[in-house]
Length: 438
Image (tube, rainbow, N blue to C red; front, top):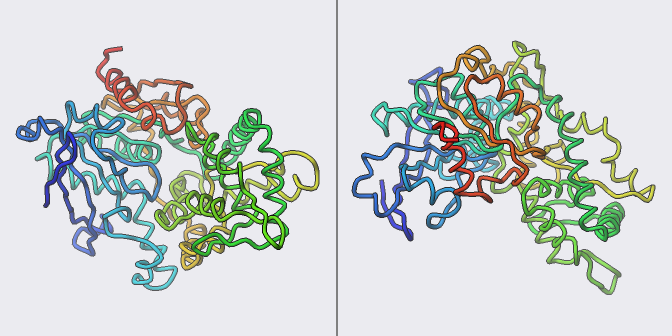
């Protein structure tokens, strides 16, 4: 365990050994990493501080790497000892990616392994870690996006470990299937496209020109990924962030350069696209993305079966070829994973069969207990963004009503990344709600 300093903070590395399968506590183990953060002026007395556990969005992302007391962290360390957890398979925890998963055996065996990397297993890790760190005292959990999904599972399965729960942009539906999730998502993404093109009308023709070029030419990104029209459309994932529409516009501004063979997509543009679209740093986001919604036959769910791809066919406006045949805008897609991701992205190609097995799986366990949530006694507050592109607002509000005592802050001041953009103010508001100060 090493301790080091950043401006205003003292950080300590923690490594925890947990069962791969919590149903077999004496079986194989993996390692989970957490970074403890305390304010410099409180470090000498940190054992007296209450703990706050931060669960990152995703799935598949390690906890954000802060440098100093940035964003909400500066507010949190005023009264908490913070643990930034790299959920299993991410960050500095035992990795799960194209390089390591072949050690598990066949694609089916790899899929069986990854079935232990959902919210239910993450929460069981948290409970083992809590008992080791706090001596049994409950802690406060801050869950961003998928971290909020994990926090909702926590309330369903181990509320005794929780002093309070704070959720930002991450109240999941308790019963929606993956199909339901995407059927609600595409209209939201359409609204984000409409708003983007209203703000930047010149982007309509820019995007049509890029899409037409990709339709006629085979283009490879730095690193070897193929940039197909569908892959280009997936840049719409940016539209769910507070500055995303501006980032997208700036990326599109100077896409082409003149060459001896005619106009071509510039190296700078292709490198910018690669940085946004590559899954090399977070492959579990793609591999497990639809699995986070699966709850098996007991919830009336079948296999996820590439829900985003199937449901997209119900929304023909997102068909790039059809748009190019007419004179309307080519629409960007949002937060969705498709089979073609596993043929275009080198980080995902070796996991294609593994992903197919996960998409076909039906024996998922339920993630949420509506009866237990209806009897909840843990103070809970949730920031719900009124037109969140990533998590359906109607689904979130229905869940908020189903969790006893949950207090919501519904706002259009922020997009999905409000806890980052709003930082201390968002955390202040949620803490005030769970403490009945507002």
